[in-house]
Length: 279
Length: 304
Image 1: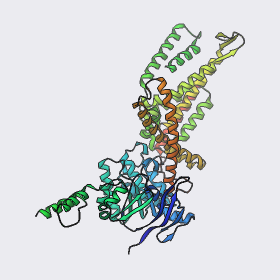
Image 2: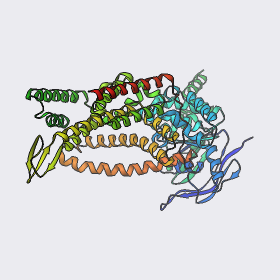
Image 3: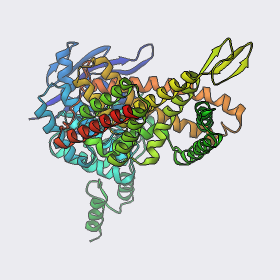
Image 4: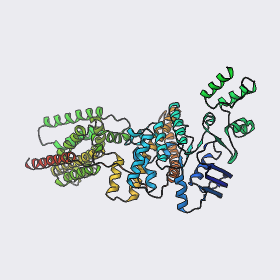
């Protein structure tokens, strides 16, 4: 049942005239996974995303999308971009239209759907992202959080199977970040495959079921969050920190306060854990 | 300030030796008062965004863009074609009322928008009224370098008529730009088959205008906070640096935007789904009423 939606086999990529941004990357993504992509700035996360979606083409190696090998034909590129959508880090580099509704219609129009279908999709995602009241507003009169919601709606309207988020919470206030996390959970429950690049290890610990760590253009770890965050050497080498809750759990385990059970992912789990242990 | 001085000069050119000195003085005082008043009214804040903001909030925003476009175009051509000073002023008044009262555009915004083009109209009016002649002719003339700058009766009548016509035409365009946001206007242009490349450029330029303006604003604030504009010399050094930086940043931004467009299956044509704005009987009625009023103005002007 575990279908592989995206697979990289020995993919390397270099920007023109520069050293390799990604080296010999092999990784596969299964349908419905929640993957956090960690790594320092310039480690190759964004390049990885652009390769996933087909904006960049690998210098060597192969990429498979739903079992089909991708070539340079426009049909296979279209299939890849339809399957994989990216929400870019800066809303201003994504938004091009002069009203919210038009902006959301850009992707579906490119898929050459009928007008009715496009209109229906725009309506649905407007409602879903709570943007109905702003449909005719130009993007330059939106706040940062609203712009973020527009960029997510942009991609949702194309109904991709895999969604990539490039540092989605980097410019959001806590309220909007919480709203974003809520949306991410819903999307995941609906069966979408999500990859999120982030510097927020606490978020990765709370949310992800699998962690990819990039460092200097190489994939240095592809494991569960427990394994990644327990590996002190890996964390030091790739410039990462331990999530607060994880470190606390580790300390409590090492000092023998709590001996059993998995380290909690969320505060509410931590409370249950503590209550169970002291009873 | 320049506008007030220009206006006073123009009135002087128009009225000199035509009636009593008192009429001239009264007219000059009126222009001065109007100039000072407008200066207070039209104090602009971020004037570059003003038109866009006003158009978004106009009551005519939801009206059919094609209707507004053809209506203002019709009046514009009528205004120029009729070649009558009275009709120009009549249309200026009518369109001002339509925009401010009908569209609920704040008077302050309207004045800020129309003042600049009117200023240009006035300045060009002065240059039309004044001719270079070898002899001393006309109502009066000033000797300059062996020649004369003269104002003739015909010249100043011509200048007055041209200015009124241009002011009327400007008010027609102001009505359009203060009632129709750029996005809807571009969508309408696509409908009447303006070439795709022009349409796409318009969309992108419009969007980029705001991105670059906000980038520029933040760079300028950052420079100011480091005393970059402390005095004229500093400002002179800072300004080109910001301009150069803006160029670099805009190239980078453009390449990012292109990536994002490609990621959304962009295949060489920008298309959006635009909302339909129906033409209603009410809208047609309003245009018809305005056109009738204009016709009435035309005949009234003929009789005067």
